[in-house]
Image (cartoon, rainbow, N blue to C red):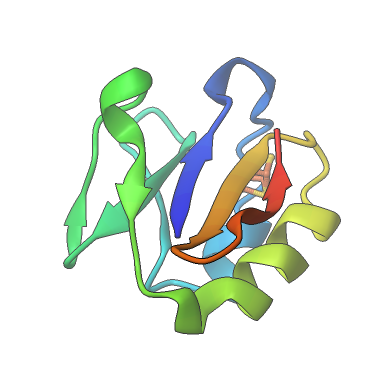
Length: 87
Ligand code: SF4
């Protein structure tokens, strides 16, 4: 699955990192980023992380809870194409 942050809307509250620190991390500017293979990606288009689908429930939960409404994700399956997304 792909996960990214619309950083312009991020309030920096850090709820995402509290819910799933293996996927989300606050940057030095206090705004959220996503991790891929343990590495924190830069903000912007380059910051789309490809992560295991096993994180889907936690990412959905963080996306619903995010006060800035800025956590985006896309889950694809080879057979069905995109099967869940929040854009
Ligand atoms: S929960 Fe949303 S608003 Fe808060 S730091 Fe994470 S991405 Fe930003």
